[in-house]
Amino acid sequence: MTELADTPVQPGAARTQGRPRSSRAHEAILEAVLDLLAEGVSVETLSMEAIAARAGVGKATIYRRWAGKDDLLLEALVKLKGPPPQPEGDSVRADMIRLLTVVGPKDERAVRVMPCLFPEVHRSSEAYRIWQEAMAEPRREVMRQVLRRGIAAGELRAGIDVEIAVSMLISPMLLHRMVRWNPALDGYEDLAEQVVDVVLRGIAA
Image 1 (cartoon, rainbow, N blue to C red):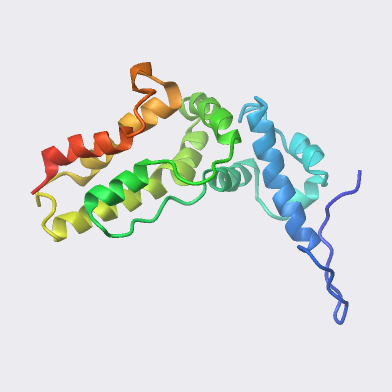
Image 2: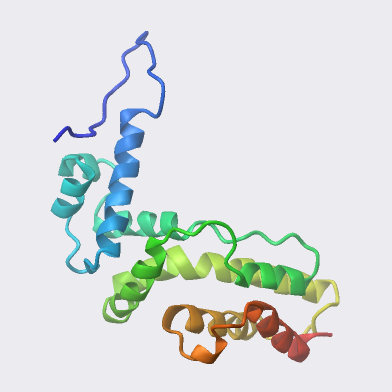
């Protein structure tokens, strides 16, 4: 096995095409974490040894980039989830539908990784922190911004509780995507639109 180790670039050395080996090693490590989680390895049993073996690197290469497994896991999950969609400012309704609708290509591993992560979130305070930082809070903050903009523009009532409104909007979508709590909603291609419309009826100006 050839290790994708860091290779310092000597002054005056010709650059080869493609990404530097250190960049390839970084990506290989993140991919190894996601592959192992998608294959059913739990957060608790995920080891640096297994990650290094899957990525084709030494453990020292991992520790040069991350202080520990939690930091590595956080970056891998951020990579898996990707950044939240950015609102375009058309209207609160249009932006919320955009934020609640899965758009673009989605890493198929997310379907296997996310449900397996929830038990860990309930058992481990560190897993809960990682979940909040990597998955939940970035999307909540974008939604807060949309709601606050709607209040300032007069689209929404000034007295609404923004945190409650965010939870009312995102919880039905999250519950259905993660556990299919109500299979009767499987055929609703416009589920995000209907959820947004129901909530906006209660908070519109």
